[in-house]
Amino acid sequence: MNAEPERRFGVVVVGVGRAGAVRIRDLRDPHSTAFLNLIGFVSRRELGSIDDIQQISLEDALCSQETEVAYICSESSSHEDYIRQFLQAGKHVLVEFPMTLSFTAAQDLWELAAQKGRVLHEEHVELLMEEFAFLRKEVTGKELLKGSLHFTASPLEEERFGFPAFSGISRLTWLVCLFGELSLISATLEDRKEDQYLKMTVQLETHNKGLLCWIEEKGPGLKRNRYLSFQFKSGSLDNVPNVGVDKNIFLKDQDIFIQKLLGQVSAEDLAAERKRIMHCLGLAEDIQKLCRPKK
Image 1 (cartoon, rainbow, N blue to C red):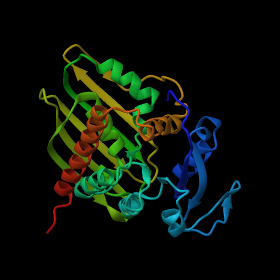
Image 2: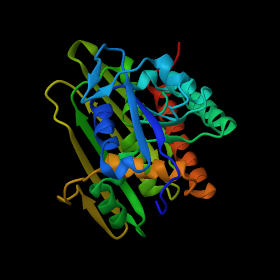
Image 3: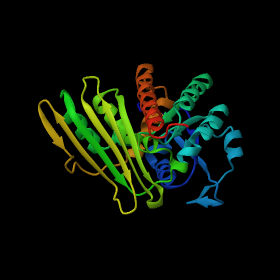
Image 4: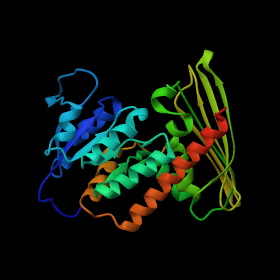
């Protein structure tokens, strides 16, 4: 960000769970206050205020001329509706991933944002992590033969956060950013609801016929972990060493959003980002269709 804005953008945060709390914290950082003015937050719970930030109604957030930007930090199943409402009201939108749980809905929202002349930004802090920076450096210029990414965690409510290919889209985004657009070969789902256990196994192929296996495994007692293994024509990479602590990745994501608000991101870069986001959402939807075919 190369210039001080003539004015600050008024922001409301929708949803004050973990992500929303981080956004509120970052919006109060001196780094942010030069560009953004936190007006209040919207929540389904009656909270009154958080750290002197006042709760406001959704209707007030949508109607207020003071509100120019909405941060959508609610559960994934509600993203589409909130994004649509705020874009229709002429507000810029930052949304935590995934922006929607449907490829078609995402397409519609991009078109609505363009019609309204507003910024629609999907957060992807996983691309700002030190671990990803290390991986990108390691894989550059190498031809993949085969690889795997296996993620484990405790159970997640699908009704709130979407099918695993959507709730885990940050891992898919890693693979796409590391190896380019991918083709879907197969996808299976082991779903034992009585045990709260779920395992999605996806086989993908790179443009150069490299094979990738992506696994999302969730169940009681499973710790949050990511296991990586890549074999190249010129060596291999098994997991990632300790590459340091991720610092201020949500603040860095917000900086990218501010650059978009200020018109400092090129049309080419915006188009490339949108293409990558839509490619990942399209893959996620196709995976869901294979694992849960409609009867």
